[in-house]
Amino acid sequence: MEVFLKISLRDYGIKEFEDTGMIIIVKKGLSGKPDYSIDGEGFVVEFKNGEIYIIDIYDPEVARNFREKLSLSYV
Image (cartoon, rainbow, N blue to C red; front, side, top):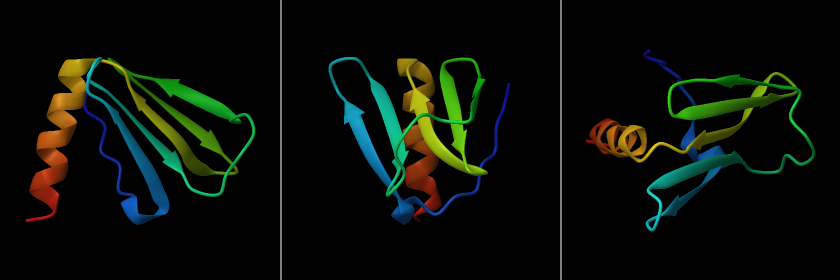
């Protein structure tokens, strides 16, 4: 499964957990429970008020692939 999301990362806080390989990306300024979520293979995307609220990449392999693609987008 491939998911393509275009968001401005300056609006999000990114926390990486080196011990587990996880990445959590959270929309700055939002709080409370999400309205709904989508579960993918190794990740969850949560939405609130029509915006991406949290991206939880819990599979270390998916997180590694994400890091590689993210760094390429800044080149």
